[in-house]
Image 1 (cartoon, rainbow, N blue to C red):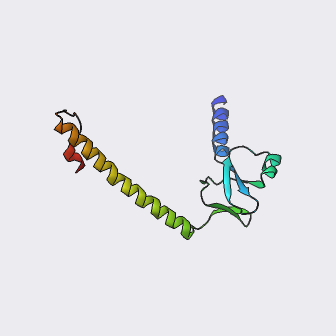
Image 2: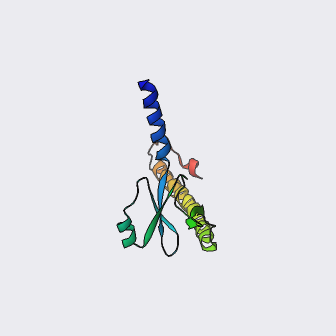
Image 3: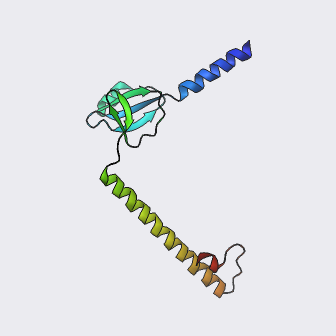
Length: 124
């Protein structure tokens, strides 16, 4: 019987652990935080924010409060452009890193250093 009670308590605790308080700005309804405990109302008021309890488990990026519920808002054109720019920058960084590794390993090989795991041809 004790095992059944402990199992039941564990299940209840696990179930409520997925519930969260989401914190939103009063003026924009944009989600700025998430917590597993009820936030202090005075603290929220001092920052012009409010909290909403939900059993949904969502990441806070692009969340908004709409019609007394939480939803993902559509990505704006500026956000899409930013995402594309970040992807292009990451791709450039890969090219640069590959070139740096090539030049460094080639230089070491030319100096006669025997590398155990890398060779310049790995980065061409």
